[in-house]
Image 1 (cartoon, rainbow, N blue to C red):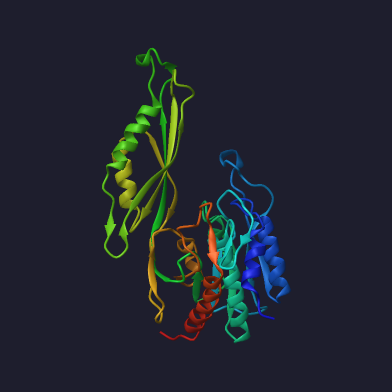
Image 2 (cartoon, rainbow, N blue to C red):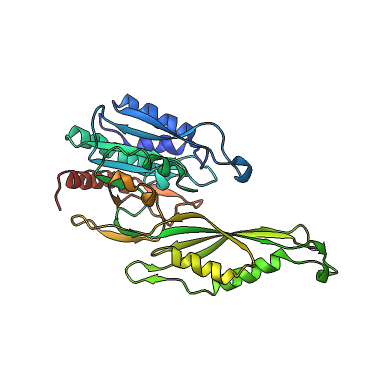
Length: 347
């Protein structure tokens, strides 16, 4: 019996799997794929240092890898099991499934599982790799990259509106930490404000020109988190900010520019650096440029990458996350066609 991608999406969305809490979703997928006749492996992924991780998880977390016993796959489908917070369960109407992860990326998991079922029946050597941690640090992908399975092609899934991505932007996470000296705010000359240092540095960073790549577009920068200080009547002795730059080329130019502009006012560290990736066209599939980053730069040992998936990135990470049932089923066909094309060597 063919796998019902819509029903599988419902079941996956109803399993909470916010980053660092992916264990239940992984266990469900491992059991489901084992029942489908796959040889299933759980690749252990360490939890981060919970003392530094707000909302850090507990319990085991692992990637799930599945293939038919004894085969080396030509094509591996991959996406992530983790979601951003907050969790909300699946609801639906005639046209859409709603819920956290419905398009990013549990509907994609379901479409890939359904496509792989059809491909193995057609004799295509196919594998499935579902990873943890994509929404935070690509920890699962990095573990998987140390354990490749010999595949020639990797079809990664993210919401691309069923368009084949020709490029993805990179992601550079920047952390700024300023230090000062605490004092009574009535006597600011006795202190040294870490917040003032941080604000000045951020102002200069925002004024800094960023690289532009004509075929991909401009780099973009977001200040996502700011914290520091104790009270309005206290000169702050510490402050920090976390930024994310969407890069369109090598990141070193941006790193050097930020370090130069900050000019010692803050400590600068780079906690995540995912490269911008270019990919090729295949057949007559419609194409797009993904302004977001993916796990692809961390899965270089799994074959030539492609990026394709149902759903819109514009509703991912929002309270309105949803996926069209028709688009989900259409993507199963697209995955089958793309994998067949690649495995057969058709240009």
